[in-house]
Image (cartoon, rainbow, N blue to C red):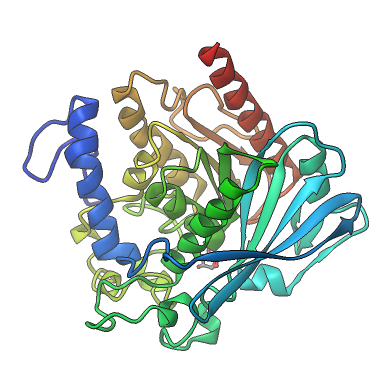
Amino acid sequence: MSKIPELLTSLSGEKIDTVEKWEKFRRREILNLFEEYVYGVRDIERPENLRFEIKHEDIFRCMRRREIRASFDSFQFPFTLYLPLEQTKALPAFVLVLHENMENHSYFNKEGNLIFEDSLMPIKDITERGFAVAVMPTRDLYRDWMAHEHYQHGVLAAVKTPKGRQKNSWATISAWAWGTSRVLDYLETDEEIDDKNVAVIGHSRSGKTALWAAATDQRFKLAVPNNSGCMGAAVLRGKEGEHAKEINISDWFCENFKDFNEYEEMLPVDQHMLLALVAPRYVYVTSSQIDTWADPRAEYLSCRLASEAFELYGLKGFEAPAEEPPLEEPIQEGHIAYHMKRGDHSITAYDWNHVMDYFEKIIKQENEERV
Ligand code: GCU
């Protein structure tokens, strides 16, 4: 196996041993490398003429539902905010990324769960526990690769730059992550939301998106990449299952990334460095035991290797002595949390319940520290 790049050694070979060196140099270096070689460089951040419109509000499955449209120029995309019926204070929120396959094949059952194959998003239970949920379908931001359109769609086509598309231009995952930041822009305007406590969560390709979203937008308090695997939370070098050449049949990553199909050892980054970009905030990696395509062990290894970035801040990073991921024993002591549930590729009530426990715990801890 080729050598995993060192998190705390700069390109110039310097040891990174202070927060200042991390934030001024190494963090930026790593972010730039991920942009250049993996996710692409965005042509736009928040457009000046970004607008939000509430299109419709009603009661749905005993929740308050607010349908919102974000737009600029002639581009627009929708998302839906779910809130509990009764609410006395501003609520922490989840931004849930819903990729096209999930959107196409999911339905709300009468209990208020959004069901997709073996997965379940217990939207109503989440609101009853005191969280808001903004569900963001990715379709209008950029079609998924099965509807390959060579960047002729969505926000990638809406933003025209004089130089046109380049090998390092942003691609699908980046477009979706951009969308989560715009949803957060909206949440900041909504008085019912505690906008300092917003998590971004997604399953599988949406999990990869959640992680890139939290790496690029430091307003997110917590990232939850569920079964995100290759180019999500899993260390690429030496992992089981999917690798660059398999994932690159999609257009999720920039053109430059395709150069690494047969040369992964040449990548100047690996995925533990992406987790580290979330420091000093919080990241909760969730795996499924038999999801070997994503590889739980490689996701767990990432947590272990990312820990030192959090420790630079004097924080607990990943508090896990074991070499192997323990089964259904969530690790939630530090700023990196992890669990591996039984079963295959999915997001279930098990995942959500533990993630909500952790999110509640960190909000409570921070509130106590503030007093
Ligand atoms: C494929 C792909 C994975 C991805 C998954 C999904 O299996 O190879 O990288 O995570 O689809 O998004 O469902």
